[in-house]
Length: 165
Image 1 (cartoon, rainbow, N blue to C red):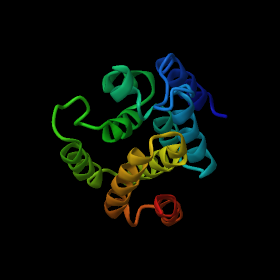
Image 2 (image 1 turned 135 degrees about the vertical axis):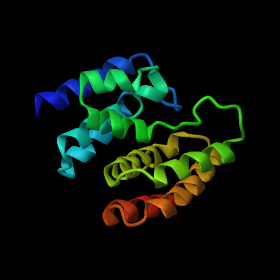
Image 3 (image 1 turned 180 degrees about the vertical axis):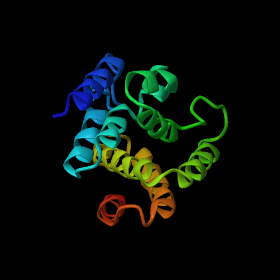
Image 4 (image 1 turned 45 degrees about the vertical axis):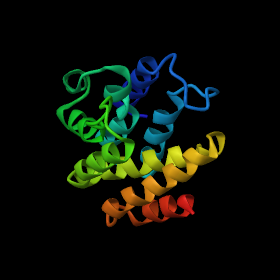
């Protein structure tokens, strides 16, 4: 593994240290490692893999995009910025937040959309440990997201759709 990727992986683990997934059984850092590793296996460019490892640190850890730019690169920071939900922390209804975030990701570059697909697939694979009502909602939101990600990566799109049904 390229040292650049090892640095991003370590950074993600350190930043998410102490955070738990919604099931309260799994350390949160497992998720971004899954996302980055999947992108690596898909033979994405190193900066895309790096952004996969780091995709949640701005939103969930209070890390700035400028720190990502300084520690990694301008391109990694741009991808992470595209993947950061701009509605995070807003006090508006969930459906409204999700629509705003979907509208934003619809304008993102292809690599950011690929990371988003892998992120969503990994989250869908963990839904069995969540409340059934949340699973229904998350699958519905994933299908809405898929509508705007069509044409990004056919194999990932098919996988996401299969996980929703």
